[in-house]
Image (tube, rainbow, N blue to C red; front, top):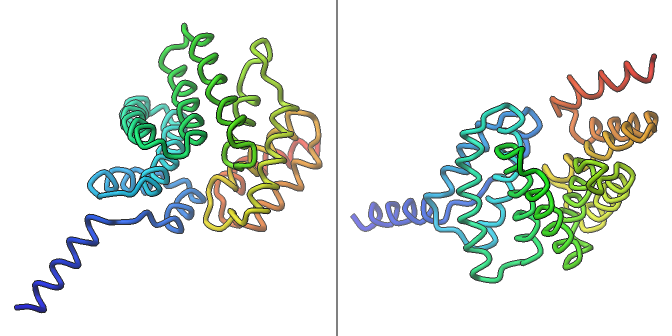
Length: 240
């Protein structure tokens, strides 16, 4: 009876303190299986998380929202955006990594543009404000530097966007990820490399974009989007 009770208590403890499996989620990113991310995000809500674990889950929510919007799953994106907003409020309440929270606030404003295109200037201004604030507070955080690159890349030129500035930040972010040994099972690192390749392409340097794609496929040969879609399109452009 005592042994049975111990097993039950250990099982309950596992449920309450369940941790995110970064390797599983990384492999799901490579195969673009975001259903795995959805399941992990939803299951995490049933767990008791530390602030660090909560921030990790928010990072996957950030990626999942982008994937959902890209697949025109707007209701699902909106659901997780509301969840992410509530969780950011928890981090803010505990003053946990303010720069990172600012970055995700910036992302939420950017995501909202998909639902309020008539308010793009106001939402875009707020997104840029929080992105700049995050960058000013943590200029050596590779995730924040990469996100700053995204803001520069996707912002219209009339509103201050610049593919060259984006490329500079992507290059800097990749260097920081590697210097700080934040590359293992890190989807943000691969996503930044992909963004860097796309920025090289947009600025007319197809050969450097090709080299970055080769690096990506060396690191992650089964990265489905790069292997099956982006790189074949790029090599076709190089051949023309």
